[in-house]
Image 1 (cartoon, rainbow, N blue to C red):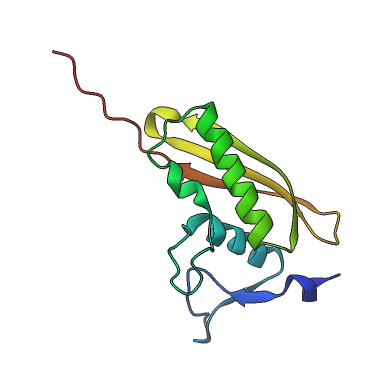
Image 2 (cartoon, helix red, strand yellow):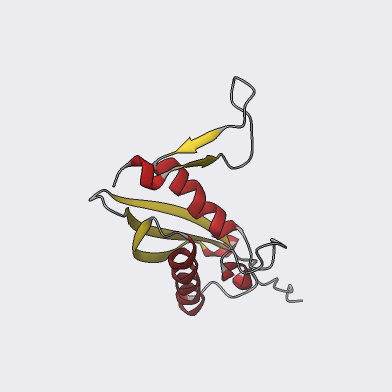
Length: 136
């Protein structure tokens, strides 16, 4: 299995290359863009493909705690296993960086099928921290 298995596709966000044609990405860059696209798309967002995407958007208003981290990791695992058949997903780890600002990092460890090339991708995810009323 080589590059023909991975394929090529339109670059995201959609743009043109220096020759004025639609920019394409290929190989592992195409897979990385595909993973990001899956994670950035909420189910129901695409009218012609309503099941496509990842349910992490359900957790935007959830507290930044271990329970939410587990739920996010599970949602990511389900979506990537369903929508990206070119990779073998290893581990999904949700790290807390700046919880007070609502920043979580979702780290995916994967390998392109048919290769022994381990890869990882870190996707920032933002929750909206609860607003605390000032005490008088």
